[in-house]
Each structure stands twice: as C-alpha cells, then as structure tokens.
Length: 300
Ligand SMILES: C[S@@+](CC[C@H](N)C(=O)[O-])C[C@H]1O[C@@H](n2cnc3c(N)ncnc32)[C@H](O)[C@@H]1O
Image (tube, rainbow, N blue to C red; front, side):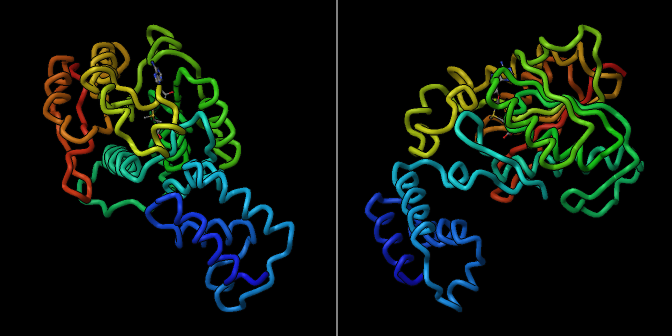
C-alpha cells in the first residue's frame, strides 16, 4: 500500500472516533512509524512495508481509545528538551513552558542584575547563576530539568509522591545529559531536611477542582493520573499546603513561583500574602489569563 492510501485509511478510522483533527493525527502517527518527514512522504508517496503498516494500525487503535498522542509517541518537546512521557506521568503543557521562561528571566536578572535583558532562548546556557531550586510536584521533571539545563551551575531538586513519575524524571535527566538535578520521592517538603533552604521554590501543582475532573476530555480524564490533576474541593489545596510551609524553606530574598489554573489568581495571591510572601506579582499567558504567580520571601 502507498503512503497516501494508508493516510486516507488511517484518517477515516480516526474520524469515526470523533476526535478533533484526525487528518493531522494520522499524519503524525504515520510519519512517526515510518521515521520520515511528512513533507518527504507527501512528495515521494512511498510504499508502506507490511511491518510498518502493522505498527501504524496498532498505534491508531491506541489513539482511537483516546490515549493521548504524546503517550503513544512516547515523548514531548519541552523548552528545548526531549521529555519522555507515558501512562502514570502528566504530559507537560505549553503554559508550563511560560513558567520556566519567567523563572529563567528572573534568575538571569538576579545573576546579571539587569532588568533589560532580552527574552531567553530555550536551553540557553547561563553559566553564571549558582543558587539552588526546589521543584515541588515535579512529575516528568520537565520544570526541574529545563532550569537545570539553563543554569548548569545551579542545584535543582524535584519532589513528587509518584514512583512512576520519578522514574520518568530520572530517565529524562539521563536522556538530556543533565547532571545537576536530583529527584526525591515524598509529600511536598517532607523528604527534605528541616533546614534545607532554597533560592527558588517553583511548582505546577495539581489545581483542578475535584468536581471538575469528570468534565475533562477523555484523553485527560481516563489516561492522565488523577493525582496529578486533583487540587481538592476548590482546586487550591496544594497552594495552601505549599504556602504554609514555604517560609521555612526559602532563603532570605528567595522567590516562589507557581503556575495557576484559570480564575485562581486572586485566591492564590491572598493565600500567598497570608503565607508571608511580599512583592507578589502575576504574569499573563498569551491568552491574557493570569497564569504565573511570583512572590518573594517575607524575610528581609
Ligand atoms: C500538575 S502535575 C505537574 C507535573 C510537572 N511538574 C509538570 O508541570 O508537567 C502535579 C504532580 O504533583 C504530584 N503530586 C501530587 N500530590 C503530591 C504531593 N503531595 N507531594 C508531591 N507531589 C505530589 C503528582 O504526582 C504530579 O506528578
């Protein structure tokens, strides 16, 4: 069978499952299985060998069961890194790259004391900053590893309760040849020593309201780990838990940064102020939603 015939067949098969972009997804699955660029496949319309056809059908079957495409392909690009993902670990989202971008901007400003720096490039090496970073709820390790790559002199620690997620995080550090990040299993700050202090605490915690979980699209609701999403009754449980303890783990003039869910900024600003943070600011994403909160340690 030729590529264009396989493409049409795969698209029609995926279409029946009611997904949004069957043609695009069919292209991605086929080019992944054939290890070839889509433009080349369209140009050459090559013969698809039987073994490859079987793989295309197997992956399409998985996608038809609404398994996320990222799990099927096995990895995502995140801030210039290849992050391996699969069942049991949250797929890194584009808005989380914004959190990394803001953190890189902040640490670059601190290290160079320059407010007028241009925006950073993914994985740009900033040899200078030598502080330490704690990434709570690290999951695949995407945030911890992006910051460790951007600041090779820094020490980064990620914690998570999920054994599976931490296995991915450790594998991702090897895959990306990163040596300044470590991953520890446990509940938020618990696995750390009592007196361990950080320059930056960063987190993208679970923040979906418990009752909203059932309304999520099947790719998320069925396949992604509920514990990575469930922020409790009002979605704010983790912000409260982190902000109650953050002051004991921040250095003088240290920073805390969060990714926020839609409509949570006012409530989290309030919790942060109660937790003793100062200079609290919000950053909007490209859709104009307040997505990132930055606060400074109350200790002056
Ligand atoms: C929203 S995901 C974020 C994952 C990753 N940081 C990212 O941005 O893609 C939240 C993560 O928090 C972890 N988690 C849930 N409860 C936790 C707890 N009490 N302590 C530490 N991690 C927790 C979950 O296992 C999950 O990996």
